[in-house]
Length: 400
Image (cartoon, one colour):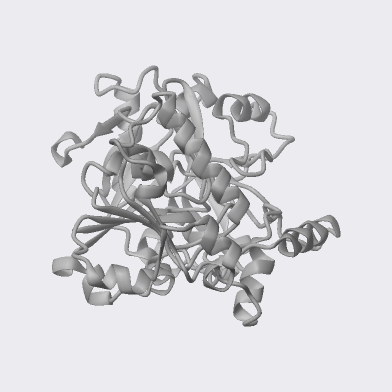
């Protein structure tokens, strides 16, 4: 069985940790198929935060990884990231199982390179006020050049080929020549940020879902569906966040007097892993998540940052958006259109906060059950802390 890890909203759901955790099930190869250094996957080892931007996060468990041709590469930053991971290994924070990063990591010849001009163009566009809140990493201009046929691939650059010597592969040939069972595909960003999402133009510049896997790797569809199975795992944060522009239905506004947004952002450390920008914070949005599951084929859900929610709400009741109204009528999840998002009115229910993330805390289990029933009984695991093993697996029989 192969596995695809997707963010179910707009990214920042904690995918890096879950990829790290899921390597015990899929540990043959982990493939990054989209995005670039605009994505930041934060991992924690021995109290230290490790942020990976281009290298798949499974590398820290000594798992072979591939950056496929659907990704962009900032060569200098990739080389620096390789050095940082090697340093983490030397310090004993991670175990590369006796191998170096360069032995574990493969990079596709077909990756387009982010050039200095792309970064400058990105910065200039944002500073004019006409941007979409980009990370200023040159992503949009570099993908633009790719589709204008004026980009430079690693294959076209002698400097890049020399710097990455011994790591480069034709990823399409490579992936279609190996047995794929046990391979994990690690997505960047989240479902709503797909370049073809109706949320456009406030999106990323690459394909995020299954379509991104096929386009970004050139993998044979039949091989992806090993024995007709490719499990799609949706990562859902127990509250919502967003960076950049675009309508955010459940956003907690700065002038909200009932909830202390400054406290919530402080305890949740909701700042972009790449940019450091403060993220917008909102209440859990179940209709949007139902929509995401509906369109992306998510088959199981990991609910993350439950310990953070407890700290954020600090004993206050927790509002959850349970439905959208349009002209006074409920909008079924199957009829939600992102084109009409600003016309919808969120409707909330409040649940009591809990004191501990444990099966013996009634409020905690009530919250989990409430969410699980509305997410089609798909929740399989709960993230209740920063560490790799701070995961609570939930059996179907536990729900009531």
